Image 1: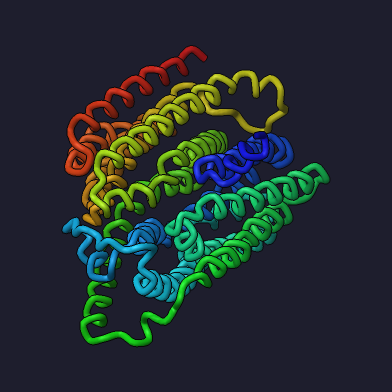
Image 2: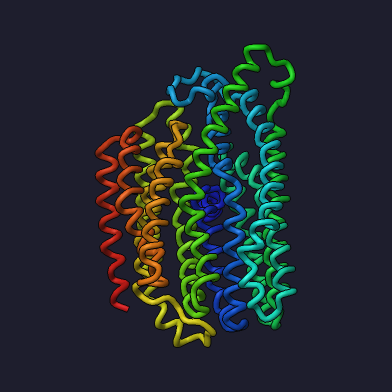
Length: 480
């Protein structure tokens, strides 16, 4: 019985995703005290900036990975090339056993060409433009030469990880999420343990960055092996004998994929991109003490946000399958349960982390201050509302009617305007306050309105009530 339970957990996409994110969260909890107590404040800021630039570099994915996950899932559910190219029309799937091998073969080939271009674009952009963003933190660090070498390593490994996203898209779209997340988990654990050991042995920042990034990048090779094994089951002969009508369908499919992606790209850059860039702005324009505090808060809130996404984002391929087969009742049940777990976990994690700050300052001999209650509350509320709205956008994106560029564009412009109005008076809390107001007034209401078209009004009302309850609980942070 114990073996069957362990086997079920081992093969569970949600449990493995949680395990992966938990390994990263525990890794951050292990690394942070060592980083904060091993390096001077200027080097701590450089470490924050380099880890933030990893996130910015991965944004060059431009939304291709979730888009390809959906299309692999559509084809794996039996959708034909014609149906995938017209998925917004909700065409009924033909009754057939197994996946559409020809459709999968086509999507795989589009994926392969796409990520070569993306990874090269990311590497060149990071070296040419990213260097301007990291120049000040590097020159202010204790060893600028080691800082520049660390930046080169970050640029190369981040571009390679971006290239590896093609295997992530294939595995997740074919419901091999558990296998993919297991690889990511083991690489994260090994990278954290190695970097921690290096810190204990008094290694410099360059060695810590090199060890962590190179070991993390090794996950690409293992994902590649899994993806090739999965693809090998299929018969890749469909595209060799295409008719004229098939060529037309392929062209339509490519147009649908790329028209979805550029819209998602704008949406991602105006949401996650702005959050990442706020950290880079803090390192360049705030005092050293305030920059270190804000970057630490940002690092922690990103880790919690990533971890809390697991219950929902692991269900996207299944939700796409339900939508393609017009099973809306099943879609609603699965999506709401996933959102409930995601928001509840995020709230609880923010509370526990925020309430632990006073105790952490007494226990550890840190070279920088931990976030205060107001900063942490504003960031927690803002990202909570962003998470709720983002899940609604993902639900609406099942229709392949991509609206991220509108919703996030409006929200992002509002965020930038308010930040410019607040920054001189409020300083460090200007961005989290701008983020909270923008997501509350624009992002969540618009995304909820759109989600009604897929899951109905009753679903959105229940989710809004849940969000309000979670928000009220977060005000307990003011007790610290």
